[in-house]
View 1 (cartoon, one colour):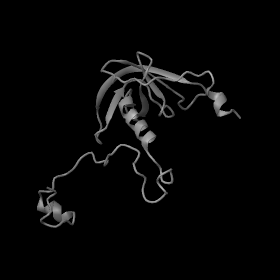
View 2 (cartoon, helix red, strand yellow):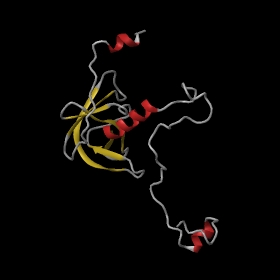
View 3 (cartoon, one colour):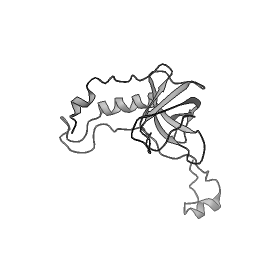
View 4 (tube, one colour):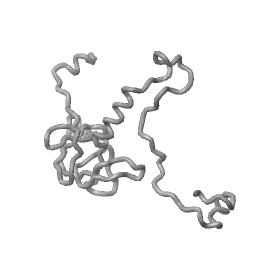
Amino acid sequence: GVEVGDFWKGKQSLELSDVLPSLDDNVTCIGFPMGGENISVTRGVVSRVDVNGDGLLRIQIDAAINPGNSGGPVLGASGRVVGVAASHLKHAMNIGYIIPTAVLQQFLECVGDCEAPGDAGDAGEGPPSRYVGVASLGIGRVQPLESPVLRRRLGLPESFTGG
């Protein structure tokens, strides 16, 4: 097999961009999608910059993101990484999403600072001193509970209004 150190010899690291791409900026997706043995490159533009239902920043691009591309770098015109390929809409054409570097930086900083149970100074008791990840409840929409009929249907007390 190939030794880990040997694999990375002579390889140049990609740099993360500290600038959020703008609408119509050119992007290049690099990855290993299904159906091939070699690297694949697709190009497109930033179609939308918005926030998803969980309140997390996301960037929509029209470059093809296919199964197997997820996690691959997405480069801006400067050649720096502006995000990583994350997903695409299955029944739509040219709608893919990337996780921008601002979110990646937050994750990387958290992973670097996080102590897992059993690390030095933790004694392995209780939860770690920090948690890795981005807080999200996964709730995209909520329904008001003003209706007494709805509260009864949900088995909630009459006095419970959610306020």
